[in-house]
Image (tube, rainbow, N blue to C red):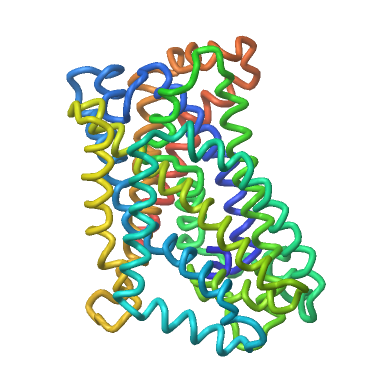
Length: 410
């Protein structure tokens, strides 16, 4: 996103969106979920019975499903790269060869479909058996290791020849490149990466204890997510500008083009590379689990399906829905760009629409005083209550609506 939208200026706008819009919206979602104790559709049925607001929950569930279908394709690429790095295909080759390996892979329909199926299968298997006992325990170990490897990559990346130009691109903002597309993308990505506007935080809020501090949860989630993303930029862009022929506008494939070049430049690069892509796959898996859990929770709570049936049916459906995205980089010309469209309309616009109406619900329909009462359950003093109320009722809806309207007119 940063590479495609002008660098540092995008980063600043994104950080502003996270702070002034993302955190307040997340807190609203968590409070709704904990109060209702149900999935997104059920939550609006409970808090606003016999109204159309349940449609907002349904939109979130469908949005999460559509994002999952495309996200699983990209996540499958990480599994492929575990094997490619482990086999030593990147060892000693130049950036052109690395680019050719990636192009050949994403252009190979059967191969991308296989890894999409594999990743969706892993996601379905974990969600069908529950999350707490397996993936949660594993990620408590694996995620710190991923952070340690990321820090190692940052140190090596910023010391590569030509790194200064990459740091300038990443840290020195050029606001002449900013337009409504950049702002819309920054806002959409803030919602995407924080899992807002699709009911994920409503779902997880329904699992939270009444005594937990929702304010600190929202802040810690947003801070941790943003810090990891910011670190990733320091690993990618200095290395990108040190390798001739690579463009920061390469899109989702950027990580698969740049990182192999870094691993080639460090001792034991093959081992570090294999480990990194393995941990990256685990990180992606935690995201697909969250996306699938939103939809599965709906069918468990509202349709009475057993968990295993819901996970299998929805997981299989998401795989089928993701086939056009898996083939969109290959020889099927009419599917070209399908993945980009999926992320644009569901990963940006639909999330923003969902967040807009969620603010209106928390601030006006359900009522800001009821929302504050729920938040105070775990944080009685609730400093900045007036600021949060103002943001949720006025500032956030106005900003989101303005950006949405302007993006359709531009």
